[in-house]
Length: 604
Image (tube, rainbow, N blue to C red; front, side, top):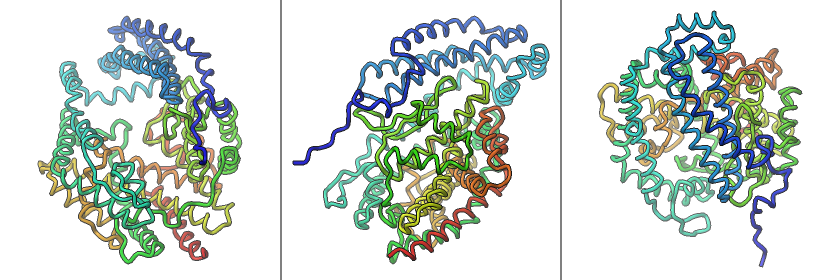
């Protein structure tokens, strides 16, 4: 019998394939020493409470003390969670991560008074403090970010009531999670090998990529039969979530839940509307792509369960880690020498934990804080997808590196609205490089199709979700009950509009809203679409070597949160209040779709 290859235990992993966490703490004992010191420091923060009205020096002292301890708490958490993620079976690191998590909670409570107390100072008083003490000028944007919430901050008693009701407001989301992930029992279906398998969310995703259409259909109809069975329950849960979100926006004096959600990043609501309008305008382009998929799959009818199966099978392209490093440096060369020098640091200085081992957390991410390296977790296996994942996570890490080396700690992070732009720009640069160097038509077609599917799933699909989400809040605000019939009618019509006549309408898809967790995130999904579109535009400009494009992009990476997100991305040359960046991204999609059509004709 062939010996089954086993995953290595953590100590068996070569050190050059592990991240180097000794840069954070020399060893676990050093972590414990720091933990004890920081725990005591947190208790000392209480002495600053009630002092912010005692002058500029008192405010500055409180700020610096909080800033220092924030950094120390973050370092403890980063070390503990990275140690835990590298081997979740290690009881020592489980305990360490639990310690750090509790410390964050204690710290949050210890500084919870700061922003409410800062809001008791008038804008004039803060301005006088800044004049009195020049060191406070650095914090001017930070102060503005806090004080702009003044019109939406209630009395201390009212704030306490809302805070106390936090679990109640979160009940709908928790109920959805429990029902969707725990209590639903999906039917048994057959996989590609004819074996009977229990449907689950993960198994469903796998079966929907099957080349056997009967397998895809059985999985699709089986999954949705369960959601149809509980559609009234899901409608009630979702309705309660929408009601609570609208209520909180109203009591905080926002004109709408959307205005409240976007205010955190100081974004105008026109960004949301412009995205939807632009996507509507370019739906014929999407329908053209769907028609190509239908033709290449050889189907008389294209259904919703035909949209995830690979058109051309798996790529014949695969890279080991050393090869991937070389390709990464070549693909990202348009970013310039300084950018590449940071990539080389990542490879050479122990930022990346590369291979899978027993107990290691699955997936991939970029993590870290202001006072650590921007570490990357991978679970490498030789493939094209892993190369894309590596380039994606490096985009996050270089963004973090530039921010932390060009901004003070108070502005040493960036918003979610901006985060995915850096990582997806890197993916686009990799796509450009592969298309410029690969000559095999099937490989080129696979790369093009990968991009087209990514655009489909991120720009078109997430915008559809965003449009439906806005419908939910508008209907509730107008007093319309969000029954399952109302939701199914709207979602079914919206889905038909987005997918057009190319895709056969299905009764099941009208209840898809019931299984989308993002509808409980409160105006979140639009950021996937805007970020992907912006990245497509930026990468195209950089590759074309447009004058000033690279310098502008690097300025965006260095800006952190020193300004509001729209101004920061504006430094990269993208005005997200206008449609231009979206139009440019659709032009990229159209160009690659045309090339895809031409390329598949040459494949025998």
